Image (cartoon, rainbow, N blue to C red):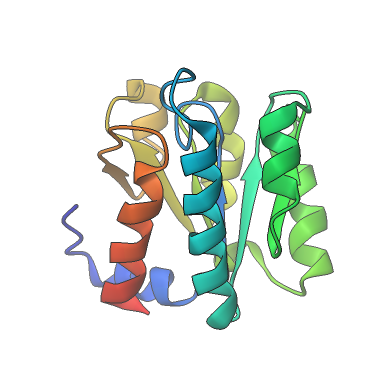
Length: 160
């Protein structure tokens, strides 16, 4: 991940909530161990809460065992069964007294484009469709379940 644009670096410094689409971003392969993913998300969320930041999942997926486990993590907001992701995120950021400029969102689908366009920092996996790549600040490698969290740790360490 190479970020050379100073304006993007400045935007990243303003991020107070890290939001992820679930399928295709946090979950790459459904056959991998969910417990490891939950543990990684707990560690990620705990670290960010020390920096007064939040974490969230915004997914079109219906409630299931995984989303319920994620929702039980302290400081982790989970929105499920949502095709209108922007309005759901508006409620979250209003509740937290934040603005869209404080949102980093990572999405991978056409459904994510409206939220990617509103987020202060918009990221997509480098394997997404061209239409999604056109609206993000940059793309990132995601190799397996939870690997995006390691990439975000690196990003935070570099720019926060």
